[in-house]
Length: 469
Image (cartoon, rainbow, N blue to C red; front, side, top):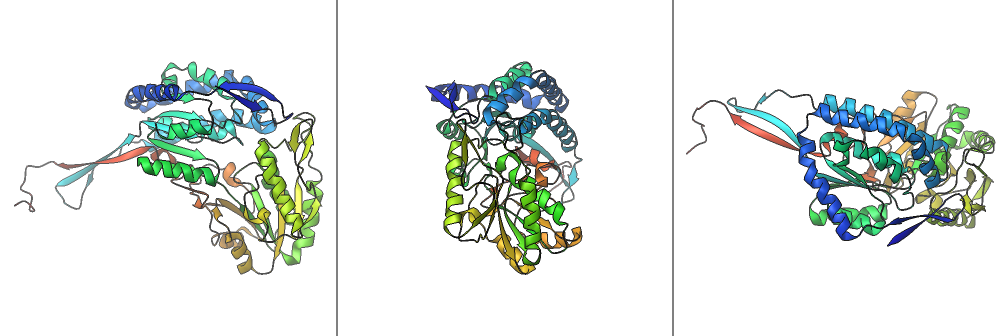
């Protein structure tokens, strides 16, 4: 069966792929499972060598990868960054793996004649189900540490952005060792559901609604899952903050990749004494940013990738306007250009928590700004959400911003900056509330997610144990 794919820049159906049958999917996973023990038994140095060979192959295919990502998403700058950052990501995970797998010495237990030796066993087959907003980055964020842990990995990217799979797999096939344990395959939601029933661990990035179904399916099979779900990230701006700095950072954090990022700033709270000054600076900066039309190089804001998301953005805008919000600058709804859907950086005032735009994930370049009076009120507003992915705090000095940030219920708090978790990958963190579940994706602990810990309890001397009959 063929699946038709829409081009986000012109709205045309211009790409098709074959949906795998249940039998084909089963055979693919069986093949990965068959080859995983050999991959696991390789010395870490050989797994690293295979990853480095893949890095070299990816550099050869980089142009094709960038072109495919650009067609998938309709934006250029972020696609170039995604492709160019793969090599750095591979290098970073290889370094982390070398440190992580340093042999540990045996330990003496609380019982002096019993020694403890620990090891880690990789989970055989990891399934990764990744979204459309950063197809390559989010397809690899779990895949790289899982491979270095010794797992086989099958990745099912979003059916909205499947074009990059072909050049990526061309690079994988140039490394025979890796091609036996890594597969990216195109499929739809039904393919993802079938995959959950075949693998031993699931990493899912996407909506809360779908994440709930994945969680239930994994629980039924009694397998682990790691979910990275939605966000409604707040930014708090206090008296004394550098408003030029805050406005520039919040604009970028709200609108980069057309706001199509789980860690986008989606609501802004500003102390009422500085509200007008902040709004003037934000408006002036927002109006400088241009749509990337008619070509991807013509501006900063690319199209809304998913047509379904257009309806969500429009619904949030119309709901806010009907309840008394005002557009300071930007759109009252997404605009169609040459068949693609676009939305300018849109600053809303007069917003409150009765509006969807302040409580539900918008996933677009919308910046609703709401005043607060006191620090306690700002913290209460920031925490008044089902989400807890990340947040940002701006104050007159970093110590004050940090103190306030320690009261926010979220996994990553950027201090006097926005969305730093997208750029700084060493900080280990977890998602709070409905934004996800499971261990950190960042830092060396991320590797341990894909392994089971084992303890050998060793009696080295032939002595009588005092608890025997």
